[in-house]
Length: 403
Image (cartoon, rainbow, N blue to C red; front, side, top):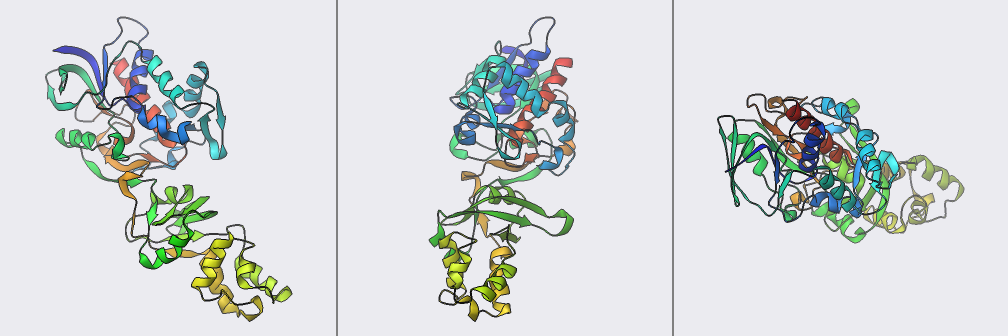
């Protein structure tokens, strides 16, 4: 049976980065023996498809408040220990050209494969077993015995970087949660995050004819100071709504909750329509509404409200208020989401109460670490979740190298 210092389960962003970080931190003495194993045939598959193939690899606006967790401050230590600019420094050293888009999002100028190649280059000296199934894991004296389809291996440290359940067609599974339960760690029930939302039939009557129509919108969830609010693109689909604004709000939404959409966030539509009525009362309501919304959307809304043939002069103030509310404060109760099939991330996971925030090590089990998406830490859309992969992997690596 082969012996390693560290076995890392998962060759995704967190696992690959953790392996390279352990090696980078070990400057003196013999190089540690590291094994990274994964059932996939290629490493870093989520990196490869992210950002339209250009990988939104981090975000300059990373802050712990932009992450969801049962313990909202848990991720702060790791994020402070390895920042977005720290990762950019590695990208620059690798000669990878990048650019910044809106809201601090950083993308490769070229292919996302450049990030994968950088991570693989950084972990040179570690063993990488792909297309390798995990059969069982057992804790034993001095470490962990891992049974694989290529035979048994042993290591002093075991790092679980298996990811969540999102995008099962790429091989995602709940094996990391099974291991957490096996070792007595608690779980926050996993659910799909950053995912399109679906509607019941009455709301689909509007959405289906509008499939493919997009608009800049504000999506809100909750009330008062605790409300979540995102302004970005919204896309109508055959089953409901999608687009960045919806993906963001989906991480806050739970079954039974309502969301509020403002489809014309730069305009107080009630005031605008009253002013237009005073000066151009003969203009059709649909035509007037098309000044603020895509024509197909404006026509659909006026038809739904029975105003498709009406002129502005015919609208009473209450009817204007009703129309304006339908545009600026459209309340909806989604019936569900598109689920794991299209979810970009997994909400929930290994309960942070059972992990050390500085090291990502299980509090009760020395040598056992959980990093990346398998942990109950989920970032906003826009590179935050990759930054959590880098930061949590770095935190575990630093602890392992110092042991």
